[in-house]
Length: 366
Ligand code: MRU
Image (cartoon, rainbow, N blue to C red):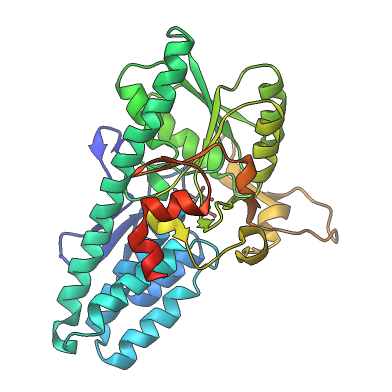
């Protein structure tokens, strides 16, 4: 997507052919900074510290992390070490393990001398595949937006989204945002309600930044606003992303997604989840019980960073000293609250049969 007229992806191979460039998402929206990853450890730290974030991008970074590792040590022990280092970088998004399994499958059977080149080639494929998948999601989600636009006779279609499932969270296009960008490109009037998404504010900092750069009308709202808007007919549909979809259709996504789904259900607002197939985990049968939920540092809750009027970045504490805090990064929305799953192979009902019929190769591999 474009930033100030220049085309960017969230991650790429640098001109030297081996080091990896990525947008440092911790600095947005205040500063646009590109980071260079030159080792497997760099990739693991980038994922853990959320320089890169968003399920598909975490997977893509891990794939390049394996490639960087193969330059350092392509032995069987090196392959295992890289896998073990990267797989624990963050626990919830299954795309991380998916990408690492794909890499290991491609690399384990071949001669260590050939592994570095093969690793870059496979990582490049994973990256391109993500972009293709998101194009598919865009087309399938567009039909939903078009249907609402035609029912509203060309009036503005109001979409609510949570967190950032935009191009920054993927390689390009995004998942939840892909149909929105396409609708906007096609001249459909769309407006996005952007949940700020405390505590890290991915909505306010990243989704608003993306949409702004693309000229998509949007409004940032405090996290607790969605229910009120839905009660007053101000949301036509919700589209969110996900970090892991269980075989039973339960959806894990950024903390607070469940509350939006409840409000949508109570108000008859369609609640869609956009996902690439690598986000489906057929080994998990009950999302609420079995998807591991990341707990992050309490500092994310107690402290906020922003830009002062004179341009400085400042961090302030907003919680009394000594008050305990909890920071669950994700929650699980039960399948019964999800209207549909927007995938690259169509809009599916959130249940095992539909998922298995659409992605038989994934269920066979599980
Ligand atoms: O903690 P984050 O910022 O990595 O969480 C991101 C989300 O929850 C996204 O909605 C999800 O990864 C889907 S991204 C296409």
